[in-house]
Length: 483
Image 1 (cartoon, rainbow, N blue to C red):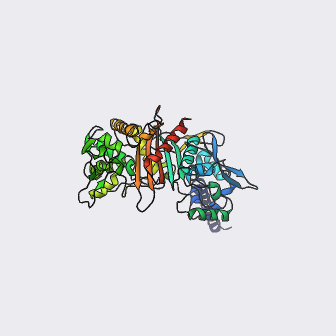
Image 2 (cartoon, rainbow, N blue to C red; image 1 turned 180 degrees about the vertical axis):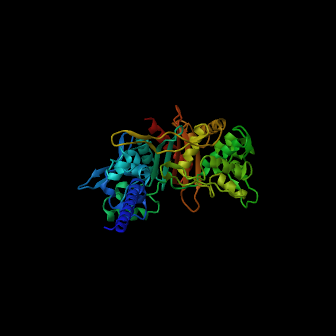
Image 3 (cartoon, one colour; image 1 turned 90 degrees about the vertical axis):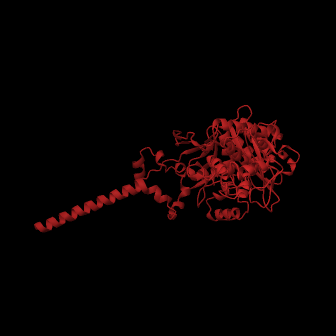
């Protein structure tokens, strides 16, 4: 070849080598660092084609498998669930279309694609070696979860939910919801059966697929007076401070007065002034409506609520967040008064109200709720142990002590006195009227057991009657935690 041609060929080889190198670098980067993002892209339909060809790791609690995979012939695996309706709010489902609950929160750990499971991370990704799925250990107490589900199911309620937290660590011991569903039905390999199951469940008005413990809002009734009382303590009052009561209270510019429950007539709520602890124990509407409307007012109540988590979607597992509870921001005293007795536009989830009780029990510190205790590799090695973390400081230790005193007064002589001989040490009842409905939202929040009060509980049942009717369910769940 002539020299000019030799130089041209040489340059061509150099350009080709550079381009090949760039291509290899790009492939390496995509396979090693962007593969998971590409697999998870919602526009990537192939992510659902091979999802049942992976032997996913189990979800366990107290040594019991709650979810696992069985080989069903060839190279396919069927996801199975133990006591599916009981643990559905915990495990969620793994279907041909999507996943929820812990199946979603720890999806990549369960299917083995989490980078922490690879022995030689980048090499394993590049050569396409599949790493066995890991085990997700939940914080739930299986006996208490079953007890909660059975009690809620037997309550004759339209909808019901319960949450129990270890107040010191934030560990979720119970997250139950009814009506529920069986994850086995929607996690079938048969796409047509899955569609029919989803259509049937989706058409039901009470939304069994929705985790009511964390993802549905209800008016909290008088349990919200706990936050209003906390706002009064933060404003300088004490449990012994004489506060306004009386049979009725008309907020400024309001067209209608707010009255106490008919059952309070002739009781201490009728008196013009009584101690804050007594107003709380007897659940005097007039006291807390006045506080919300005038002193400490809307700003004070909103500040107290936000310190407990109102207004935020609180996470309880990776990627899982509860729906945000809310108290109205308003300059209209009548709306603030109504919201301060847990009616009007005030709404909360059972998870949120359990956090309120937990913060009070834990000397004013609200711990981050968590549904996962630890992650283990297939060989049993602990990959991650989740440690307790603080969510917020809702109030001082002394203010929390006074709130516990008031919650004990509810059980000793107030609206919750029928629980006096149970494992519930302190609490607050709540009854929210639902306009045009024949049922109420019946609430109880509290703590126990009496010998070592470390569990905070919130129970909601929708049925005719009063909040105290949810109290025995709370006691039954606390009893199960002690067994």
